Image (cartoon, rainbow, N blue to C red; front, side, top):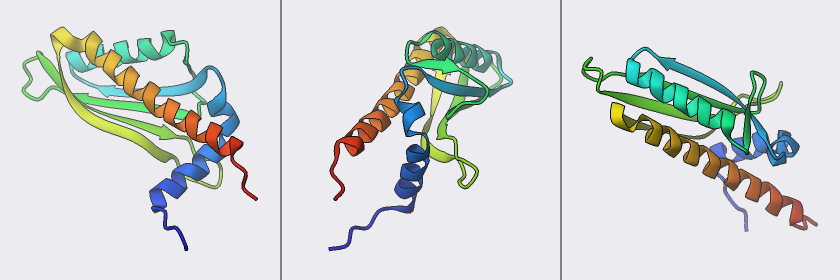
Length: 144
């Protein structure tokens, strides 16, 4: 019986396999970028970046395997909240494009900026842990 895999899953598997050793490292290098033209969004981006930098699992780097991007905007120009979009990508190599790992959207009020940053950090950690488990399982499998 032939198994069918979605193209996105195969692309992600290829990208992960290219960087398996680096992803398995204790501290995974992360490239962080933000487009935040609103005050609450700038605070959220700052705290998210700070969470990554202080993490025991990640290290900030301009040349990293994992790319984290956040874009924010004030929905009503009131300065009380931000709408954000985040994306986690795995860097492609010279033969492949970057692969989408995860992403999402949210709303964060100015009183909850640190909590929102912690939630984003938790999401990032969960995604990387899933990849590490998949790599570990693949290395233990017998492909004969």
